[in-house]
Picture 1 (cartoon, rainbow, N blue to C red):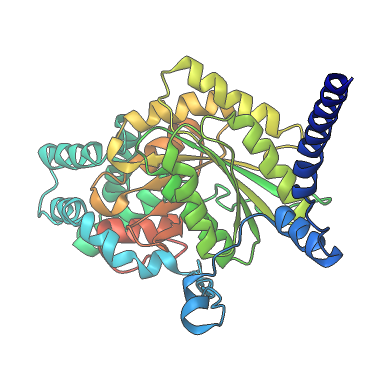
Picture 2 (cartoon, rainbow, N blue to C red):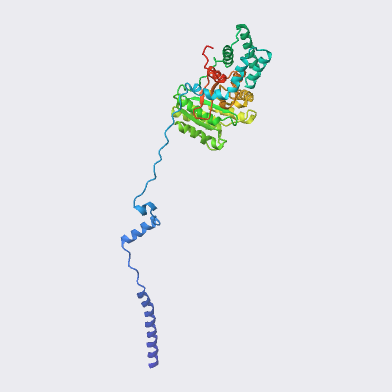
Length: 393
């Protein structure tokens, strides 16, 4: 009996000790008290806000946020008036044509104008790119008038020559630029030409001519193949406050030209001037693309002017350029550039005689305002390097 009692007490002791082993660890693991509401909210806000933002260097040094400086836009340029530009630039043209003018006048001043003298006069005119047919007509009329009038003095012969040259330039041709819109449509001028004729630069100068004559202008940078062309045109336009519409490099030129006209309509500008990519006249694919530009633009309305930029130094090759471009886009006027550096100004006569296309503007230098409306009498005056001719000469 005593043995059973001892076993029972031992089992009871084991049970008591096992129970204490389970209860005591739980008592030791006490839970953390709940955080105050404000602390929980603060941590939530920090999690949402992300890492702290460091202050700018200016804030750390002065405690005041410094605003970037405001760069003032450059003032708009005021182009020179176009009236009288050719007279102001006369001396420059006269210097470049001096050898030609003096040579002709020297030949006419001879005591006896024999066959050799007249042949030399013909050679001088042909060398100046007047053209063979035009030269023969000029010389034949000059010889006949000299014979009939009995003219002998150098001054009289000079006046007769000047009158014949002015007649060859056909002063009756309409040389005005159609730059005024109608019925809510701006006038549209398309500028075309071969590579290297200074087309984009001349296009910028034409914009200055239009602004100087009181026209508001929108420029279309449809030369999308030459990366710098749109930037160059935009720079020219920005100087006189003309907006430039451009596309991405390599964009469809016809699309850019179409958008330029649409922008001109929306903005209510007087004239939209579209610069196209230079192209050789014998590249059929490029010329077809130019025809597409014309057709797409004409969805807005007819093109008022198509101006061909010709380099005066190209000589008779300019005639072929003018012929092909006229067939594709119906050229209405020629802008003759680089007359300040050549004695071949007779190309003006050749172009007009062959194609009936008037020269409307001439470039006489590299200055921004060295593009002038063409006047036959003033041009001949500069060509011969003498005093201005009377209008009725």
